[in-house]
Image (cartoon, rainbow, N blue to C red):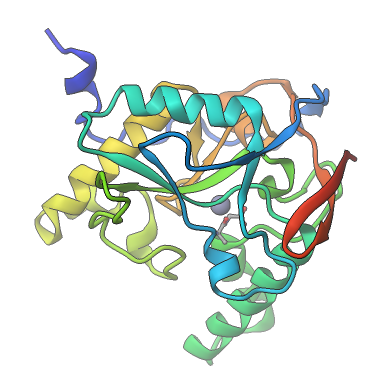
Length: 248
Ligand SMILES: C[C@@H](N)C(=O)N[C@H](C)C(=O)O
Ligand SMILES: [Zn+2]
């Protein structure tokens, strides 16, 4: 019989939920964005874009309330030796723009033979287009997307096969399912992260082992829901903190 503790070691499934072209409706539920502290002994905060000094980035992690609650549930599925390290949650529009430009520059440099169109296509694999149009807005603008990795009890990131935000085919969540001999440890760590997150309701973006969604349009598309409960949030940022926010 397979217990919950065995279930988190299961291989990462092939994503069977084909993303539909339909645009789920947004019925904003008004759940607040909350600032996540380090009060939970197994949740560590490393706001990576703030550390990278990206203008208007946040020096704390902000998430919708239920997203945080689900992270605490995910931890219950992992043995007590593991923690979750949060790299990014709610992301201001300006940061999304900055990331899009910065990734497309890196891609243009790395693939000098790419056409403009190919650069955009490759960039979109790693960063959502900075848009607040309902049909296409970037998932981190909702407070329902999270970039997260697996850590030890001191908050040190464990080997998961690539660096965070690495532009590489190895960043695809299932990469080591297809190449387990390359790095078995990374394969197991990805399984633990993927299974504990999806078992509590998150969905994963298949090109990035670190990116998970809940209740936003990306999530609704993956689970085939007709509605998403989190729309975009606009925040006023002061001194790298959210001063005020409103639902768009
Ligand atoms: C930039 C990366 N950390 C990320 O979050 N990518 C997804 C696709 C996004 O921008 O929403
Ligand atoms: Zn992300």
